[in-house]
Image (cartoon, rainbow, N blue to C red; front, side):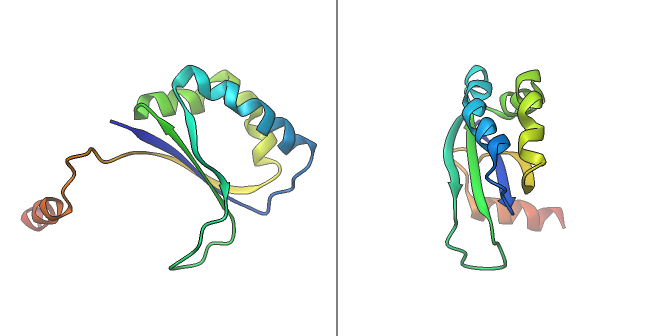
Length: 112
């Protein structure tokens, strides 16, 4: 099942370290099948506060996403981002093509 790495970035200092990070990140993704689906887009916020940009990276599965994040290559460049942004990053599993929210609601109701 597909998985995603999500970054919510605020207060980006677009200095030489960030430029270095951007130049190097794709090479860290390639061995794990990672590809940018959204990269630095400013969302049109419909609800709640959000004043930053969004990054969404697709992976074949959660284990690939975690392996990328924990890889020596990514860990080497990670401080280039964390020193120069205020950010939240997380990994999550996607829904399959047969996901049914009504069935999910029924399961949640049955578990109460």
